[in-house]
Length: 144
Length: 144
DNA sequence: ATTAAATAGGATAAATTTGTCCGAAATAAG
DNA sequence: CTTATTTCGGACAAATTTATCCTATTTAAT
Ligand code: FES
Ligand code: FES
Image 1 (cartoon, each protein chain N blue to C red):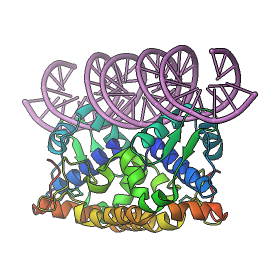
Image 2 (cartoon, rainbow over the protein chains, first blue to last red):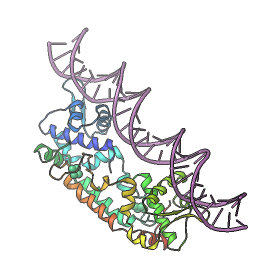
Image 3 (spheres, rainbow over the protein chains, first blue to last red):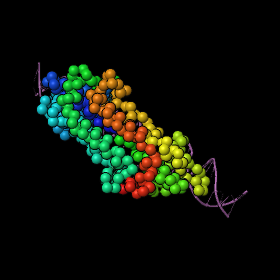
Image 4 (cartoon, each protein chain N blue to C red):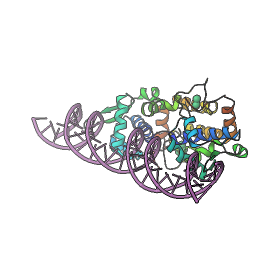
């Protein structure tokens, strides 16, 4: 469904947001430990998310990653996925035809578009705050 | 969503089924041309599907691939996807945790399982006959 | 029997994704 | 100013997926 990079990116972002709820910055090291991901690879993903303004990064001692409270409402799961995996999953043909076209549909088009749309809407409706809160109150977890 | 191998496998199977509606066997060459896929790679996928009994193959002149009418009702899109990509998409965690567990859910679990289930049911309810028929009457297409 | 046509299958290569290493740049603190 | 700590970024490596090549095997037809 999502690439490994995207899975790591989502988990990292949720963790950053959760810690930011308590005004705490987190370092790459903490993040990788918390979400059980390879550190250097996770760094690349976070760099990309930072460049796209989805998380804020700070260098130096006491540095790390954070997300301000306002962004937690603005940024949706959709934005993370779109930034890392692109929009193919949201608009692409389920069978890989060049473009999804309802007028010249592939055999699965009619059955696929509904699911694709459900997924898209779910991701567009899910805020980082929501996900961070669930994690914060111990309702959800990032490791297993 | 699906791997390239799976996309090719689905398209090839639908094409084979459509031709079988007219009692016509199709060769690898025809299939690859029709679905616009690399021939040798498609061969591997079809070999695997044949070993799993999802299509029938015959060697020698007049040989090729086919699917009998009864199988078109029995075999679901689900079976093709499961044979090629495995069941991770049907039961796996959206964030890649080892197991999806509703009692210890990841942050997206509650929002993800519904979509995962919709996809699974759609694939389990879609017969090869249905897809082959749509293609046969020109309602759908395999190339673009 | 011989030939030609087709799938089967092993070995290999290319491309992409995933993961690692190391030095540069920034910055907080003594 | 120096040092320690942290992210940034480029180069590289490993693993996986995608794709190719070539030979073997099966089989229909002459
Ligand atoms: S054309 Fe394939 S999903 Fe729309
Ligand atoms: S635990 Fe992640 S989807 Fe169920």
